[in-house]
Amino acid sequence: MPLLTDAMKQELQAEIDRSETRKAACIEAMQIVQRHLGWISDESLLEIADFLQMTPDELEGVATFYNHIYRKPVGKYVILICDSVCCWIMGYESLQEHIARTLGIRLGETTADGLFTLLPIQCLGACARAPAIMIRGELYTDLTPERFDEIIASYRREA
Ligand code: FES
Image (cartoon, rainbow, N blue to C red):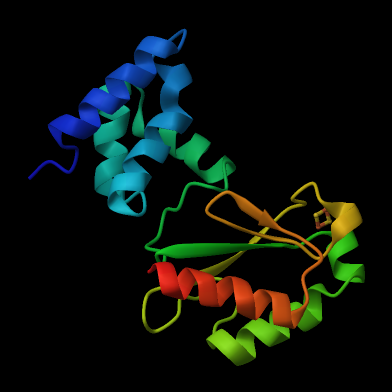
């Protein structure tokens, strides 16, 4: 049974129409499908590649390179924690310890309730305000354990 619905295909087509070539829409196409299905499985990657007239290997190459595309199931909210030098200096490790204590997850893991996944990311561009995380495109900086708890509580209320 196909994973891409007619509605998704319409969104993909609209993205293709805005792009110079079908291939040029590939990141946005994967983001659209990911928004609907949560992650990009092998099956959906094949269908997207077919829709874009790309080979699965070509699309896989882009998906691997672009770290906002999830090739494994993730929680409802992905916490991207900056794993680069300024954040290392400004408390990355203690923040990670705090996350492990409060959410019970380490890098690459998802909470038992399926709400949060913790993934590393290279510099989020907020080095002067390290340490930093990003959730759903929202950047959070100057993080303290208390501030982290407030942020997580707000996502729990929204869930
Ligand atoms: S090093 Fe973390 S935001 Fe740049």
